Length: 106
Image (tube, rainbow, N blue to C red; front, side, top):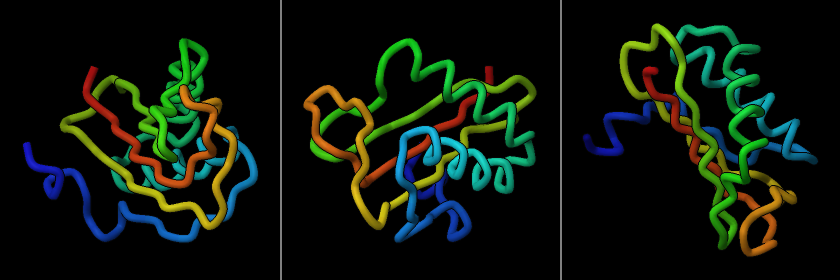
């Protein structure tokens, strides 16, 4: 699968202003819900649960939060460029400003 199959104009968000990891996950869950038609709170809870296992901040300002949703029919992606970097508890301790959310079928 090519990345252009995961992203549409609606799934790209630039200059998003958030101040925390939790707020980012809430905002990105809202955008993902609009795209995939699933419940925003369900998406947020799955992302939060995944972050509790370990950070998805992979370093160099990038995070890849992800999760699996029941009854999802395909892969969905959301790309976000933050207005200001935030602490994401990344592996290299650098703040994050590029986020790629990936949702997959269970």
